[in-house]
Amino acid sequence: MGHLTPEVTKLLEQALSLSVEEQEALANSLFSTLDREINEGPAEAGVEAAWADEIRRRIDDIRSGKTQMIPYEEVRRRLAARLADAGK
Image 1 (tube, rainbow, N blue to C red):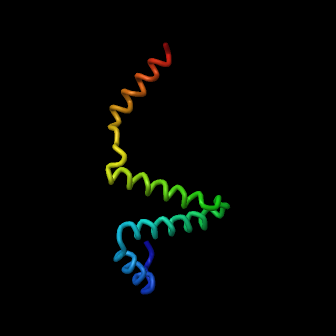
Image 2 (cartoon, rainbow, N blue to C red; image 1 turned 90 degrees about the vertical axis):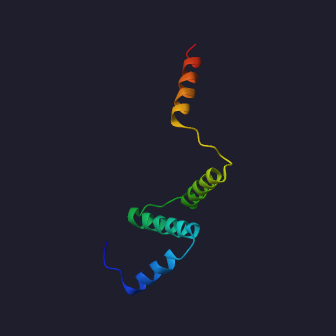
Image 3 (cartoon, one colour; image 1 turned 180 degrees about the vertical axis):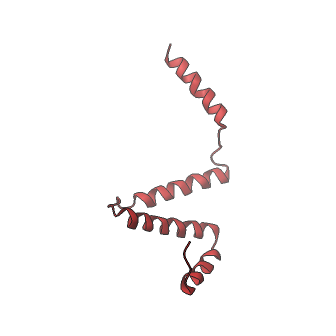
């Protein structure tokens, strides 16, 4: 990483004092902007923000208990059973 100017150091200190949710939103915004600048391709308006919102919603659902995670082994067992039934 390059040398941080005093202005950037001050911004970083301010960013680190934000809540986790605010830091996440700021980081997503910065990454989206940087990604567009690097790739110089026309991104569909709102697609990245929509995905960020969807990911955030899914994480919130998991953390709140609204959505329960299923262990990989169980998912694999269920899929194998479906495939076996579909072949009959």
